[in-house]
Amino acid sequence: MLEMHYYGDPVLRKKAVPVEKFDEELQGFVDELIETMEYEDGVGLAATQVGICRRIAVINATGGQEQTYVLINPEIVYSSQEKEDYDEGCLSIPGITLSVNRPSVVSVKAQDAKGQQYLIENAQGLLARALQHEIDHLNGIMFVDHVSPLQRSLINGKLKKISRAQREKSQDL
Ligand code: NI
Image 1 (cartoon, helix red, strand yellow):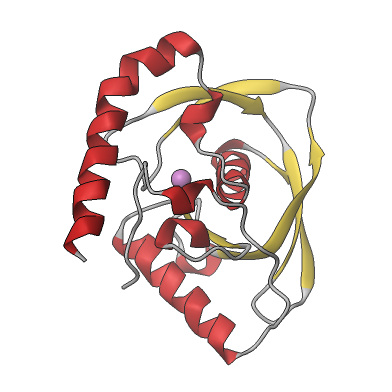
Image 2: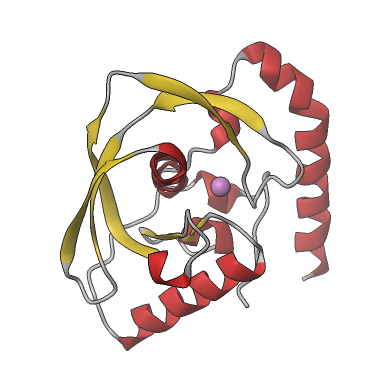
């Protein structure tokens, strides 16, 4: 299992670099990322959340194993004008769920673990949400960045607590 990194860890604010080599090492990492997402019971997981700054994320918005998307170098190629509110949480910010406003429909272009290009067209609902959330992670953006100053002030105490726990943990190593 890969080690999770939590809010307050500077690695979560880094912009991840594109993947160029599609080899066995990449496949091995992707398998571990999927395993970690399933273990943590998440809908998605980005490589930055396990401390690896490469443009890799995995998503399973349905719970069925055949529905796991492997997203290498993903890019949003279409976002609807229409937006919606949707409750989001993040494995790197445990215990916080907030309503976030984002485009309702997105299309995403990505490569699979073998380097094959594919398109997820007009994703909606939880999948659209997860795609935007995970691609944000690869750009150093976290979902709490999108909420209003008022919402933010309400969770500041909790965020500080997570940051402190993260710092203490890194000092142990
Ligand atoms: Ni997240």
